[in-house]
Length: 322
Image (cartoon, rainbow, N blue to C red; front, side, top):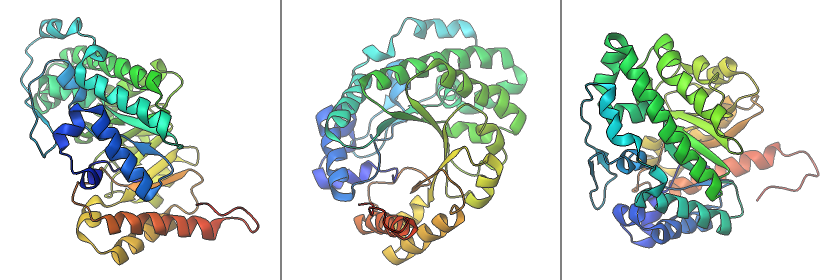
């Protein structure tokens, strides 16, 4: 299950902005990708601005680039009052993603999922990530107020995706990589655990970009069923740390997917598969989201290498996977 979405724009001739504001356009993109590569699960387009935009935070929407949230400082918990009466499920862009999941559930014969913003990252968009990091030490009470609010927003969105037909959601919490282990446990892990405990009937996966070896054990104790790890991570070591009951997802490099040859991608994919050969719960994927310009031949190389490995590992007499 490569973390792909934006490469599909090359099949539909549509823009990033069209896909983010039009559920039919985005589903067409996802459907074309599925038809081409037939992954074992499929997700909609990654977008870290959905919840922030629904709250009314200022967001820039370039035609052919992913959106960016213009963060601002938050001086006190009283400033959250502006957002408290907002139901994010009533937002037009949130409705787009809920509708995409409905289309995916109806049209794709595999598990389908969506992305939600992690509580710590959403809090960083509400009050500026650098300010949030500083206030974990200088004003932890304010941080917890914002994190409690952010968690409620993400829970609401997650429930909406579940009700629309999502089998799983992936929490994207890239800002949490800046935290040390004790800070992560208090200001990020605790709120991911709160989310996983509040939302039923949907599997939850956690993704944090970059090298997360310093917080990996804490990530594994957040109540999620799986960890999606970036290409910086040593998967053999990660498997040892998290134990055999945690699903690991990854971690072919998106940069290599963009710049390397199919032969190099095949070699890297085989290296990832070799490193996880003894781990019972593993899903071959990319370390993070693939950019639009990734050559399709490289996605094909990853998929073919994964299927060839799986075919070779299948028991004698078993029906070979597609």
